[in-house]
Length: 296
Image (cartoon, rainbow, N blue to C red; front, side, top):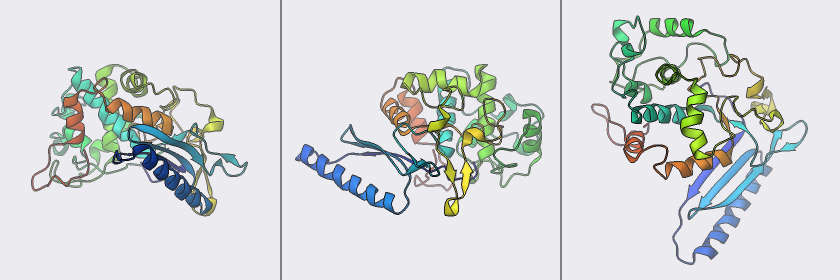
């Protein structure tokens, strides 16, 4: 996803020493609140959720979701979460693997026809870890494009390096994963994620359009000098979802409260098994790569 500021959303989790726990929690919470309030005075705008010692201690809005009308952010403000979308795409792939419908070692030739030789060895694992060699973007996030045109352009695009040998962040690789999710599940991308990830986690304010968002609660994006970028819900979409330049790699809308529910769900094995989460957090590393690798 191209870098566009949609205000700021934070969900932070801290674990403190249990000595004098209640007193420490209160003091730390007050220090954090003071710090964020000072940040707000110099322009910070967003919502913040913080957990200390397993307990939610802060869930507040700061600044404005609509600067013109002075509408303040609250814990219910809806943001485009940008490339945090990718964690849901990767989790959906691992859920499908748990269900026996694919494996991350599958090559894309299993799901797409007319794959050129240079891309015939790309696996789902390669797409997940941004080691496919695919370019980052084909066109703009909100440019109209059909699935046929998207795939045709992608397959004809030159690779940046031989698959599996290096790292290069690829948004279109995650869009390709979104198509695979739909092919394998027989559902739309958003519906599969809702039924298998979000609904079990209790996340009813996360998605592209299925939640039927109250658009008054959607944050307006701003650029430098408060130039108005607008709301993601007012951009050029393919009906109820973004076009494939963005679908699967960005653009999902959510709140800090819903992302906190996702965090809680990942602490259990209800949605992703321990094996799947280990795969999510501890990827197979590339030749000559160390465990300092930061992308799962």
